[in-house]
Image 1: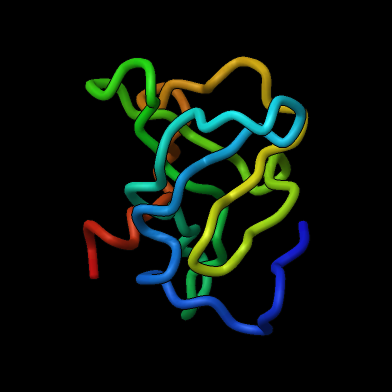
Image 2 (image 1 turned 60 degrees about the vertical axis):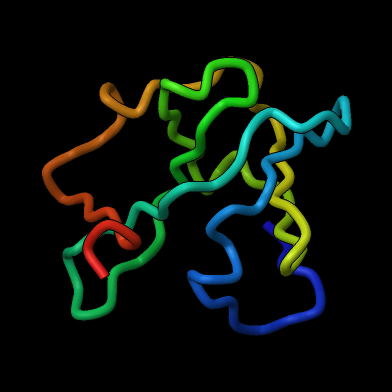
Length: 102
């Protein structure tokens, strides 16, 4: 994963960013929360939660492994992400929703 033009990204810079499919360059949704793992003092990011452009009532999970690039204050680009993962089937007991919690 590449983060363009920065070394540190704040949560506030990511929430609301569009999610863009890198292959088609089309918007598929927007970031609404970040999933962290609470095994350590500072949670590591496991992925993002986004709402789909096509179905705004459902929330989906975007794993870090499927993020090609984050362009600060512009967009999050996906790679190899053809079938969105439903959030309800993706959360584990170790996960914490960072926006919701903080």
